[in-house]
Image (cartoon, rainbow, N blue to C red; front, side, top):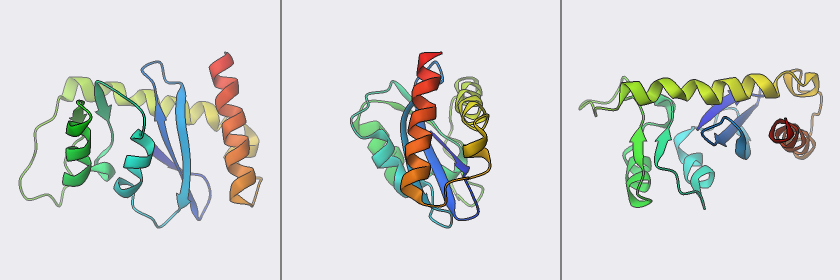
Length: 135
């Protein structure tokens, strides 16, 4: 799971498969936290592992990941008092989502946030995601 700023006031949240293909895209206001949106990203998915950056570090999310039978590979937020170990070697694969964001941003309309309405922006994100799947 990952997120990227799609403009000054919007974040793109995305779940990808092991090959870096987008599975789910969600938009939130830029100031909204990342961890609260994670359950919606994971809904209906059955991963073996969930790799996410430290912005997604929360006990509630870790519990949800355990409940779906997956391993949480999330580094701890620096403010966490008791550190939780994670598989550092598995975490190295998280760059797969960063590469997917990079592919999306090759579409100038996404990189420049051409569409001002969130519904139009999300629609084009979904079209670009479909194009990535067809490659």
